[in-house]
Image (tube, rainbow, N blue to C red; front, side, top):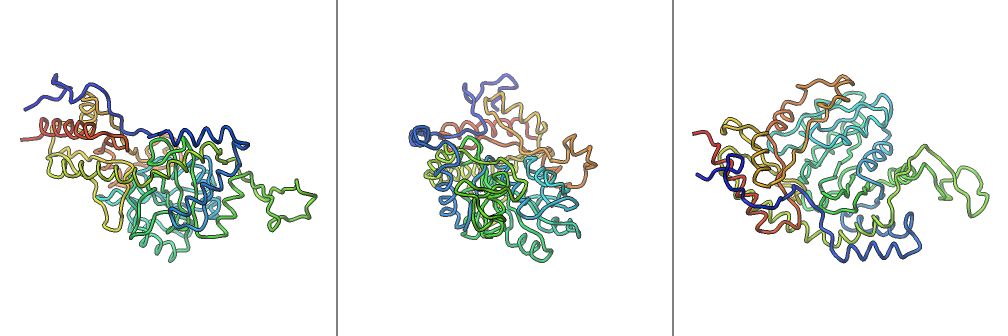
Length: 398
């Protein structure tokens, strides 16, 4: 049996493969350079063009571009009316922003457990978390697989809550044939470099609700408007504007917007390649002892942002940390998504205790995020598969 590199064997490759990486081509570069040569670097026409393009791709009526995915979540919560004394239900298996957005508004995050097979927030657990203080649900499409939107929307409708879909991972995915971004009350996107589509940074909120849309526009830009229909006092002239709410400087630059528009031209291509890699991984690991792969609901036609490998410690002589280190020795550089949010010292000081979401906590102990990005070559994919198989087979319990 071949020895893993960590045991003195030969690594599957000499150069490193990282878990994620952006893809930038000449069209992307030209798009940004054209803006740099134009009259507008921010608050210009590219913002409107991006918002229109996002509506075209998703089918949503309105889109509001902003500075990043966290800002998108914050203004979505504000538009939903989240405030002091409210509760916002979310998952612990996510980046901290999915819960922090509630804290920014003076509300309290409440953590619902995940489905043990899909790793997405479980509707039944959400329902158990509902109280008279519940104002919204922030449901994360973990890894790019859609949450169970029909079930969550019904719970929110029955309980008088707003469904905010944290779609940081989900662009390109469809739920029951309909693009994510046009289904929940509001959906947020992120354009961080490891996401399927990038602007370096950047975010957006999509909605079909005109009232939410108008609030999102205000909260994005200091609470300031020039819209004559919204002004509360007579205008002093063409320069006139009013601050109607306490908003934020969450504006996106035209350089970012131009890059995202160009990247969106490649979304179908990005999605196709990611699906090809996921299919190769699934096939290679389906019967591999000591390994489990994420299950998908049939309603989700998924463009995967992350590929999660789950280690079965009962079938191996090593744990997740040792498996992670063994992959690094093979020059396969992975990550872990995510540490449960309430494990962080900040949340501990707020009174959150371990043990509240057993499925999420068990998942965290066993997962590794493998490399997954558009520019991975077939050789890269084969190297990752080869490293995982080598390690799993070498350390399998007899």
